[in-house]
Amino acid sequence: MTLTVLLLSVSPAMIIILYIYFKDKFEKEPIGFLFKNFLMGAILSVIITIILSAILNIVFPLTDEISIYQQFIKAFLVVGLVEEFSKYIIVRFYAQKSSEFNEPFDGIVYAVMVSMGFAALENVLYVFQYGASTGIVRAFTAVPAHATFGILMGYFMGLAKFSKNKQLLNLTGLLVATFFHGTYDFFLFVNFIPGIAIGAFVSLIIGIILSKKAIKIHQKNSYFSV
Image (cartoon, rainbow, N blue to C red; front, side):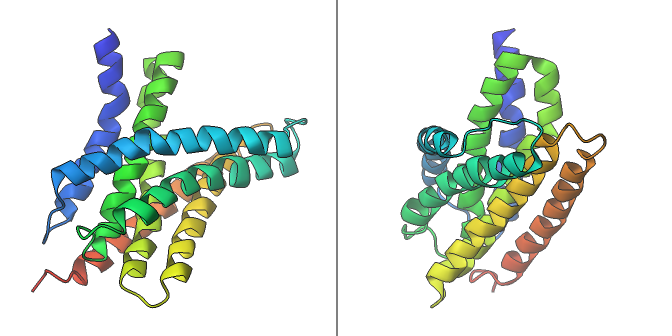
């Protein structure tokens, strides 16, 4: 039973990883380096998230669960920015500095690897706590959402590696990922307004559409496509 639950927890992330791996058509990344980024996403980014979240929960204590303002702060700052920043710094200071990161599409690859490491561990914790039904729901919602955040962040970070506007493009990736993450969570957090949760699924669909476009653009402009 435990093994089944574990497989249910990690399989959505693994499927997305394979999808992105095969979308990298022209110059595959080393399996070992991909795995290191995945592990750093699962371990280091989670540790950073726990520390920063604890600090921000003190600074911005949630005292009114039906306050739209407080749920906005929670969604965009305490959760969205913290989680995306914890992934961003791994891509920025580990993957992006590597010689293996040698074309814009690699921004998407490594950002997704880090994001899926984070999402996989998060999913394991949720599924073991709340059961298999939660894992099934999250396989079609939260995990793909984390993937879209990673793809959108990685798109800009891929551009940044080979641009003179490196800092601006890197920060744009972080802000875009935070915006989509915050929007997705906000509509779920404001559950005291009937029907508003549909906004989360709308934002997820928009994120998926933009992610597919980002993948196609970097595929088309690959340095190794000739």
